[in-house]
Image 1 (cartoon, helix red, strand yellow):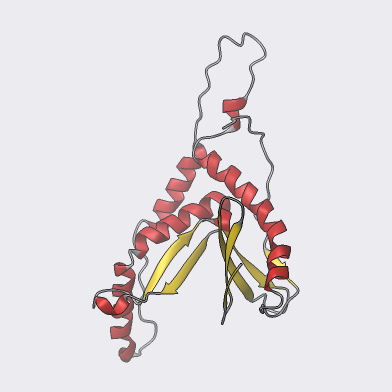
Image 2 (spheres, helix red, strand yellow):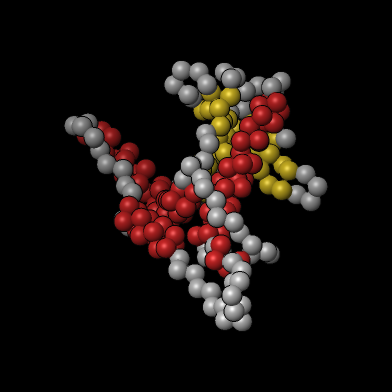
Length: 206
């Protein structure tokens, strides 16, 4: 892998919008094609920032013009320090749900919800999510029903997963309120990409 990295000027990841108001079987491919152009630019910037966070920084590829035989390169990784500090400061303690208001009948349900979150190790997944958005300014979480939940009384009825934002994104409508239209994740196979597209009432594989 080449270490010739150029220093980039970036101003945040671009939000992906669509003029559509609903994603259907007929328009999902066109909507996905339109969104991929913006996402690929975002993905390239996220990959640069992630590598920067891991210590792969432009100093490693800098060429010393005078006396090149004396060339000591050191990465002072402030990006890693900042991300770790912010993540520890905001998510050092697990996030828990508490009752709001005077309704006593919801206390038991909130306790059960916290138990589900503990079963899913949500605290660790919150930290993973925070790491992504402190690195690159965006992060995606997927929550799906767990079909095996009935086999264990302590099992949560849903699964929580933190997605790699280089391979996932959300498309929002340009209409009032900018509601989300679809969530997308994909994997790269040998000769193609396999897309999983989720809308409020449908799932598509492309």
